[in-house]
Structures are given as C-alpha cells and as structure tokens.
Length: 88
Image 1: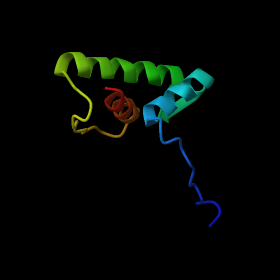
Image 2: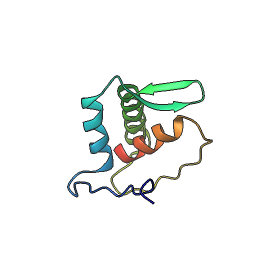
Image 3: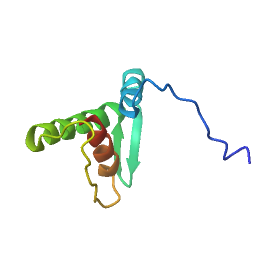
C-alpha cells in the first residue's frame, strides 16, 4: 500500500511544462528519457519539445486551447510530442 502512495501536491499557478522547465534548469544534464538505446537529457528533451512547439505554432498557427491529436508509436518521441504540444 505504501509503495503505491504517489499523491503529491503541485502549485496550482504553474503548468506542467513550466514545472518541467524548472526541472530542466535544476538538472539539465541528467537523463530524463530512456527508450531502448536512446537516452535524452532534460536539456535535450526540452530543446526537442521547444522545436516541435515552434513548428506547430508557425506552420499550423496553433493557439492556446486548440485540440491536437497524437498518434505515435511507443518511443522517446511520445514525451517530446506531449511536451511540444503543451508548450505550443
């Protein structure tokens, strides 16, 4: 029972991607994602998510509260896509 107790309180004034960016600032060179033989640091993950967010906003004119579907095979790109969408 104790092992599954994962409830945490989070600041209600910050978004998920802002909390992630705070973590990037604290530990940019730590490994954030491992999928098979691929490893990404927090900095690399953040850079790739930012690149996707800029692409979505510039190419598709994404605005806040737009719905974006995600259809992707399991890989390191899933987290990049989720963060990129949140940031866009």
